[in-house]
Length: 395
Ligand code: SF4
Image (cartoon, rainbow, N blue to C red; front, side, top):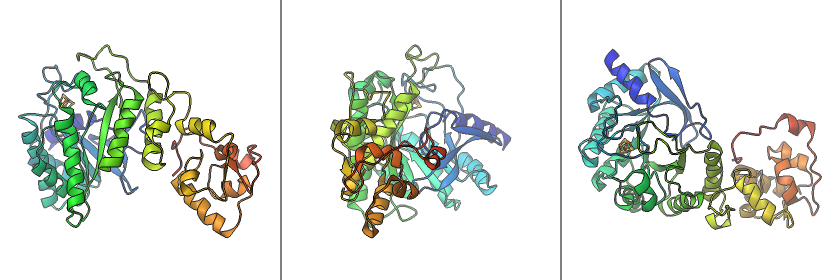
């Protein structure tokens, strides 16, 4: 058991660049050390907070992605779990109350199909052991359709990491990976199966959600490229979330001298991505610099409002939900609250909005309250409740 825990400690520590399910916007210190393994504080798709064990089944890999510490031929530690071994080790931690969910990925050995079989075997053993907790499985490049279906029947969430926004950029990051055939196609299979078999569900009566991850900055791609692909995935393939992992150079890899990506770029990409997914914006509406990147110094929603609403403020008592979502400080929950409140009475003051939990001061320059521009000086109550670096947009 100690040997297995030692391996798990190593393989879990190597998952720090996988931001999926991390609480809030990913923070620099995502994982904390607990007992013998690295654990993540995670937020599940249903909002539940759990302790998640993210691990690889093996750190050995036959592919040669330019950014990856596990690329073939690199001098690094290699550890491997057999499916039964991982399942037994995990279930012991789970039954001891130390972990509440599993996110399982892997290096590729013997091809994508064989590696996917190892992940599926592990998931299958866990479910047959009676594990009913959260399970996030990685789909390997090259996995077959039947394997994707089996993964859908076992997992709560699947991830297929595109790494780059298109095949040209992927070629500069991971020359062995085929963008459309190996990465986009399985995402399409998931959506085809979800649509064609709406009544046939996975292990817990729901088909799993899907996510992807991009390595931001490693291929000199622009934010427009990343966001156009994200928009396609949200609209056409009902992706739950795109994750943006800032590129960090790894020694003894072909990209070891490539500059690290500024963390604020990651933050702006998440803000823009939420605008596409939850706020009804399209990529064409966002402001980019001449290189096609989001300006680092401005919040993309605020920039849009400055250009479109500062001279044409929206009447809070009449605006549609779609229009309310365009106003800084108003997210989906706040828009619903406003619609509910204004059925009861006309909204005439910022205090009325603020007391309903709405970021009234952010909204103030872009709204009319009963036909008038509000006076938007900060009150003491609002100053004391201000949190400048929190959730980028309120829900
Ligand atoms: S396939 Fe995955 S583990 Fe292997 S080198 Fe590429 S990114 Fe690394």
